[in-house]
Image (cartoon, rainbow, N blue to C red):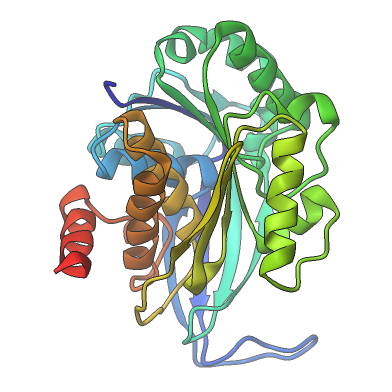
Length: 308
């Protein structure tokens, strides 16, 4: 496969403050470090896939502000196709405010801005890219109607969708079989399935619920513990990698972008998840969402070192 990926999703500007610890309710903590970077789940996953060698087209919506030119410039620098990056004249670019502590834990608040204007009519304009894609990579930081439209459109076009159901939501039953690979973390799996996840048996039960409703492949990421992968005939764990985390922001997005490119290249899903797991592990050792995404050679080196 050629590794053509169309990513449909959000773009944000991330404003991050790194503190000694996360504040309690009503508490102010001084002495933090401040930095600004580009984020948003759609853009993060597009950058991650591009750095891992994919041919990536991003479908997203930016606001009418000074960030627009900078963001498009950044996408082009990553060799991301931008012909379906729309600009909403009446809105601001999506913004995320992030507080993270020295161990990588974080609080995140998001103002959607122009992401809320990524409507089905804009997706229709991007149909040429969707039609040519090997994989469509989708997340949930855009309007619900758009998510439904993408899933229905891809079903009609017989296009496989990797859906990172984040932020989590309950899905109506008819949507499950429109997803080729569902990617969720433990908290998201609990919210989507309604199954309280306290142990590995609960993780496996949640994955089986996806399968029973028609999703052929499910990946439940488990942070430092790795991931659980389930298909129609088997389920297995991919072990976590020990690294010194400094910022977990965007790690799930790096995982999804790397998973998409590995899968389009024909890797079996176990190998694709191992590749994605290594990419995410590298990303948490660095600050920022998009800046932390590793290059393909870095991921392959980590996998090689683990095998030696």
